[in-house]
Length: 378
Image: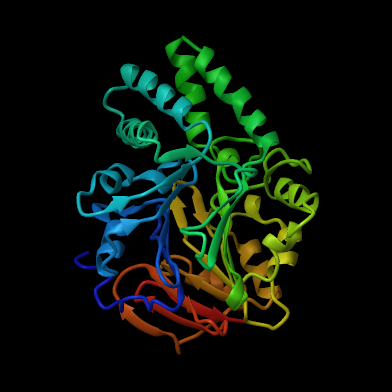
């Protein structure tokens, strides 16, 4: 694919810039904070092209202040070992999903019986690298009650972890315990596939139940970003998934649901699957003025799964948000059917699957895109 992000301008120091990349398998998010600081969420590749490293190179970024590894699905951790091993990039601190050490143990056990399985190899390598980072006290398991992070005491931006909830930790623990207890090869293989390949519309299936979600807040500019990871409905109760986030925030005496309210942009959860659509959460996300909230989707196509879901596209259209899709080549007909109108005014600056949004201190947003991305209005 060559240099996918050649042509992207360097982010301005006085702005909050959001870059979302992803083709048909995987997604990665890079946030450049005003003044200083970089947050990276997950890694992804397009065939043999490491999209995350390519984007960081194009933006001349050599330090990641906070790395978030949301969960163990390969479309979110493929390429993670290469990022952690990159000599020209320093990683100061990382948050990983809880249970990462257990996943590494399971992957190592499964590899002994399936040594040629490339997916297990990549998963084991990614989790092992995170363990090594944790051994240096630079990686911690995060969850919905982890609290907030900021680069310095005077940093204008706060990152807050929203998920997973304690309820979902217990839900996943029972599934992980079941796998760890298994000894027989065929049975373990069946459970392994169920664990790694849980369908998007099923509830309570790891690894998505363990997925991190977070907010990025620049209070002075009234800019809030919601990064949904792959959070879905969990087991369908008020304590799980997005409803679990809403229930937990409602109990907080300070900001509470304000952490989800009036977002400038939402990285749509789980590639826009129906299982991740929580309408009550979106009632909080959308700002009063039409078009001020962006919904950014990294599409997914693998096997029989093709996302974003048509119903999700229709729901977002009814909310009068702006829609951005990192790679629209295989979603065009579905988007048109949901009555979205292509916005040709957003400048195309590079070849790769990227959407870039940037906000200044006045809250005004500017947008650019790669050739493979598309922007839509209602």
